[in-house]
Length: 65
Image (cartoon, rainbow, N blue to C red; front, side):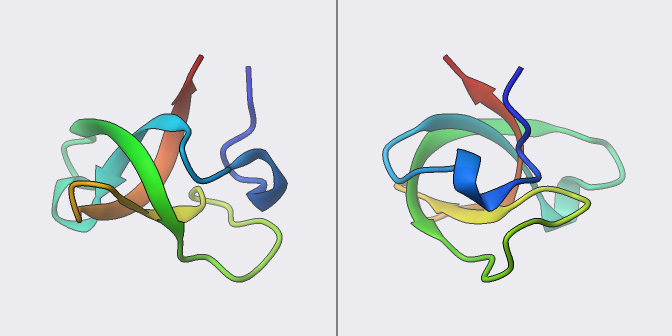
């Protein structure tokens, strides 16, 4: 299992599941491919914030292998 809270584990082009800000209460996940890594710090307790190729922004919950 890849730790999505560590920036070093997230790369552009990876397929991931994110939770968008407006879905944090429900935990609804959105799948997509990472186009930008938005979190600057090396780790984040809720997951690294990314932008998908679809333009959606959210925190990575799972990396799809």
